[in-house]
Each structure stands twice: as structure tokens, then as C-alpha cells.
Image: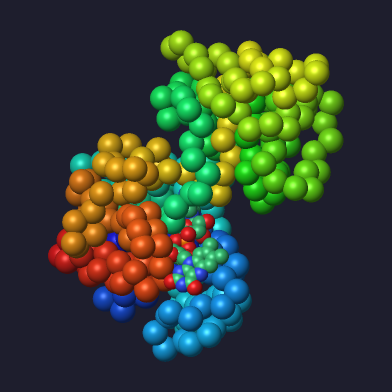
Length: 288
Ligand code: FAD
């Protein structure tokens, strides 16, 4: 069993991984080899100590080199659920893999897209974030898919293999889906409604002449780069979308720590790096 699983390959997660590795702990980071769009997209970074006027791209290269030197590999799988057991954690990932660790550090950043009204109320009752985990439940059913990024487009195709009908709400450009059972809806949904389970997705006004403002559905998939920590980890305490932590970056769940943007403002590299470092030391101490 791993000492620590880190969710997120931004600077908070990388900082935590470097410190844990230096402390002799076994660690696995989940995220992307490209690290984080929030680093790559920065035009010029002026406020990071020691790297004056570095571009985001150069910062990514420097971090990748440092990870390679420290022999820390990133597992390119999206974490879909974290389950706190008595003395350890089970972490589920998008391809359906399961991992176990004694501690978890949440370094998943913040999602700029707010949840749709009703979304969080119906998690596990028709709202899903993972096509490969839950797609089979919707064989011959009607579903809506809200997708915010082209990187998850393959999941739409996967869902269309099972569902009878897919209302696709793409929130990105250059959509390349061409399937007979996919109906394009080019409007932001207003809310998700239902009873025991989701039964409709609603729009402020009809999205098109032939598409009404309420669409009957059996389920809805929200395909986003990152999922809010409260949805990812059952029982985790959050406030205004941020994980509640103390000065040791401990959450309310024993053995679960958080660092970086996901714990709140200011959203800055230096703050994320510092918190990743504290979380790693606190996790090492906990492991004793
Ligand atoms: P992130 O960098 O957001 O990294 C989180 C990572 O976790 C992402 O790669 C994400 O894909 C991954 N992830 C999330 N959920 C999961 C999951 N379920 N499974 C697997 N992986 C997951 N700050 C400054 O101090 N100076 C600047 O000049 C500056 N410029 C910026 C410019 C831009 C354009 C932007 C967008 C931000 C800028 N920032 C700047 C802010 C800075 O980027 C953030 O504060 C910092 O990136 C936060 O680091 P993080 O590690 O907490 O999160």
C-alpha cells in the first residue's frame, strides 16, 4: 500500500510529492504529464521567487525536469472518487482502476465553472462525472452530457455507445462528434430536476426551435477536467467550494490533507507550493 496518493499535478501536488519523496515515502501523483493548464497558460510569471519573468511553458519544463530527476512519475488517470476507510483510503480512477494509500493529499485546483443548480443534490442519483464508471447504467436510456473540454470528447463517444439518445451540451469549440443518436444542444443548462432520481434538464429558454426548454432524461454526465472536492471525497467539509483545512493542511478526515487553490484564495503559485510542502510534512508525521 502506498504511503500517499496526491490528486493533482499542479505546483501544490508537485511540491508535496518532492517533499514526501525526500522524506522516504512512497507516493503516486494523479494528473497529467503536461502538469497543469494553469501553469502552461501563464504568459509571464513575475512573482515566483528565484524565477523572475519566467513563461508558463518554461516553468512547466523546469518542473518536469525536477520530477524526472526525483524519479516521480505522474499517473495519467482522472480520480473519480476517494473513499475514507478506517485506516486508509481507496482511490478510484476514470479507467476503473483502484488504488490504496495510507494518506491522501488533495491538490486538485479549483474549477472555474460553477455547478449547475440541482447538480450536487443528484450526485449518485442520476448525476455522474465518470463515463467509464457509470456509462453502462444508461444502456438504451436518454441522457444529457455537459462537456467542458475537448480532452474528454472520447467519453462522449463512449456514452453514445450505450445510450439510446444523447443530448450533447458542448462548452468548448471544434466539437468532432458525429453520431446518429447525438442531438446537439448549444445552450448552457439552468438546472437539473427530478424526484428520487434525475428526470429532466432545464434551460432558461428553448435552446432551438425544435428543442424545448425542458428535456426529459434518465441521467446527466458532467464531463469536466476537475470535480469539486466535496463530490470527489464523501464526508469532506468544504466552504464556498474550498476544502476546510487547519494550519497543518489537515481536513476533517483523518489522513486526508489539502493544498493549493482548492483550499482557497489567494490563487498563487507560491501559496500552493508552500501548502503542498506543509501537507507533505503533516502527512509524513501522520504516517509515523
Ligand atoms: P492547479 O494548477 O489548478 O493544478 C491542479 C491539477 O489537478 C490540474 O492539472 C488538474 O487537471 C488536476 N486535477 C484536478 N482534479 C483531478 C482529478 N480528479 N484527478 C486527477 N487530476 C486532477 N499565480 C501566480 O502566483 N503568478 C502568476 O503569474 C499567475 N498567473 C496565472 C495565469 C493564468 C492564465 C492562470 C489561469 C493562473 C495564474 N496563476 C498565477 C494562478 C496559479 O496558476 C494557481 O494558483 C496555481 O496553478 C495553483 O496550483 P494548484 O496546484 O493548486 O492547482
